[in-house]
Length: 228
Image (tube, rainbow, N blue to C red; front, top):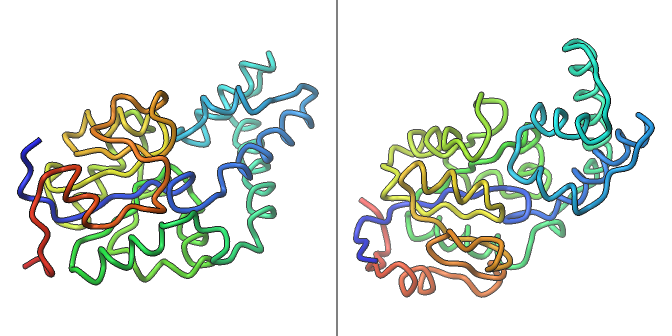
């Protein structure tokens, strides 16, 4: 693929930068148990990259439970309380291998960096892990109304860093996130299992060995020390 206009990266949060996806699962599982049914890790795969509201709808459908809209808001808030309590002691150790190193290299070379996450707790997670200053713009569940695979969150992120979708690489660990990147006209880098992210332009098992030279090789673009 011939690409000569790479100017920035848009990162998903859970599963790409930080290892908090498991806490989301535990929080949903705790809510399900409180409602009288179980929820397993296999079922949780369907929630990756999905908004809290849609995740709750999926959970309630699995459990065969029905609630009013007001009750659903209360349940969603309860799940979030569970999650926030679980991540209250996060620090830099929660960062996934290679994430901070890549962010620092991109920042040092002058590339724009944005977050594109469905999480409504993205900012406090970035603050507690010490990497919030590395981001030029945050697009999260507080600024979006549509869930992935709709590209809204990535389009908002690209606008926030004043770049075109074709100038950005989206880094995602969920198939719905990759679909959103494709629909939005972005380049995509899957982070995880190749067979689960096969629609991505390229896939790496983690960011541990990913740097600018890796991106240059994968996407065939020249690396510059700064972006004018």
